[in-house]
Amino acid sequence: MTGDVLLTAIVLLGSSVQWLTGMGFALVSVPALVLLLGPAEGVLLANCAAGVICLIGLAGGWRLVRPRAMLPFCLAAACTVPAGTWLTHQLPQAWLLLVMGALVTLAVLLVMQGARAAALRGTRGALFAGAAGGFMNSAAGVGGPPFSLYAVNAGWTVREFVPNAMFYGVIVNAFSVASNGMPGLNRVQWALVIAAMGAGGLIGRGLAPRIPENRARLLVLSLALAGGVTAVGKGLWGL
Image (cartoon, one colour):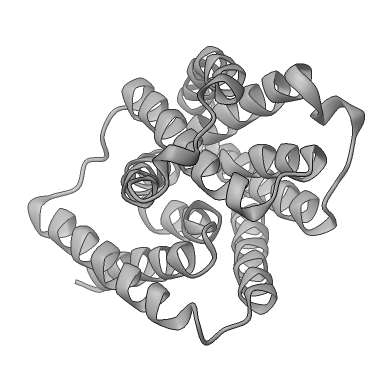
């Protein structure tokens, strides 16, 4: 019973911050889901939920998607998703927690700093970001940061970034679910997850006009960083 309550709360929080800031479901929820359900199940659930949220979010802005620009991201992700899946089946749970927590922590720190590099520009940068995102998404449930870093280096506006990020989220999570499979939740848990996603969307949209974007973004990244560090700590303890 306690586990179901925690599961609902995690998905509710992740969904709220996703609709509040346009990003953050995986960053916020993956560390907590991994600690609650285990690395494999936590990542699987994050892939499913994030994919659905991106699909819903894309409905209102699909005309702004750049199919030609997104092609390198998607092709590269398709190549690296299986590698992330392979990794999750090879490592013991303690090592998985350590790797996932480290990936989340590193991704958050890079996004916070707005890392800039020539390697993250042009077609080569898109291939690199797509490959890194595909691997990280299937291995740790967080495929968005490499895409965000590419957008920063490419000088994309928020109007350009959001719909294309949603499109990439749909594709990379679909690849990850196809590679990893579906999480083994029971009917009650699925119902709670769906209800939490819906409630989180309403809460996030309701809070969006009241909370400055910079503060909301800092909150998301702070929560994600805390979760990543916690997962690293639990992984090290398990070793």
